[in-house]
Length: 529
Ligand code: NOJ
Image (tube, rainbow, N blue to C red):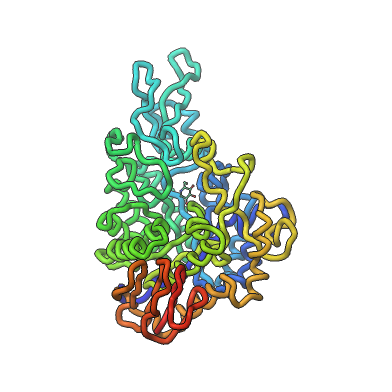
């Protein structure tokens, strides 16, 4: 990491568009809603926003099932609103990143509809992975792969039989839900279409992409059975996928080289991959100098609130990019995982720990991604079964509740049921306790989580101690960690033990909770310089 590009130490704010701000009262957040809140994001001090998919979609996976990647779904607005949002965001000093979903389309994409209407072996089917099934009648899936959401990764389509009738025929591959057929990345049309999509949005002025499932796309020849520990492949979105033939196939790097080659024509634009590859060396391949600029890894998000586990997550994250010379990234929260406050124990304890971990994350070199509502210390919402909308709930046969609890809309102000998110009925019910965590309320309170994170982001941007690419560890009492940004004076200490411990030497810059004289209490982090 030598010369500094904006993304190398950016604070990126993830906007889950459905849940951020609703401008038209239909209960679903939209692009105009995001536009109306840009002042807030500027106040928060973030550098960029990442918008989750707003493209035309039947919403089987809330927009990650894209029917037309070069359009805006009417529920979110239109292209004109998108353009206005980009222009206004730039005026507020905010960059705009959008999701890119190259692994699959929706079953409603015109390509897939054409594929279903076509015969086996046709060019229409060759854009996807259609295969004859196993068994005498082809009645069994072509291999043993499972979908990440649960259930088999294959669904049977209808083919024209000898009598000219449509009857159960070949199978199509979907590593996610049956509504998300995987594209065939050996087909040049698929490449050309992604390139068109990249240019379409880059020409509209966006600053970068978050590349969804960047370890997907390429498949091994012959689609061999998964013979790893998890028969058929692990279920679970952020589960590491090492040795699993469904993912991280070497051919994927050519796709990233193509993406990078396009981006290189647009100076200052970036691509961040979503990469759930656990092996550090294999992870590093995605961020080589001719591939993606950055990679989200989920080690910190998956670490328990335990100093040794947090340190290990940090060390791996640093090691995984060092080899390729890329900047590290840090994530505690996103729309696919339980919110930190709940993960770390819930209530006041969970919130104290989440605040502490946010200081750890913001002290580290590299790019940080905050998920909307994280700055408010929102907990997961408890939702009744009848409200659950995530496809995981149905596809797992109600074994997994899915991710709706971390996707409940943002509370902006007031006590009314929509809490300023919507004048209508929010698409997921907002728990009454969100009324105590509104943006308006927390802006007034200097001890709130929002005030803490605002101050932390401000210090990170303006204080001279926030330099240096590496991390030097200090000896720390059991259950604690302390590190210094290499080449700078910034020290961050975290106490995950049950006892207060002495603070490291230095002038206090910020603490995640009240200190006890010169002692750092449990569940607290502090910055010193
Ligand atoms: C990762 C996305 O972040 C998630 O929300 C989505 O459901 C899956 N990929 C499948 O598309």
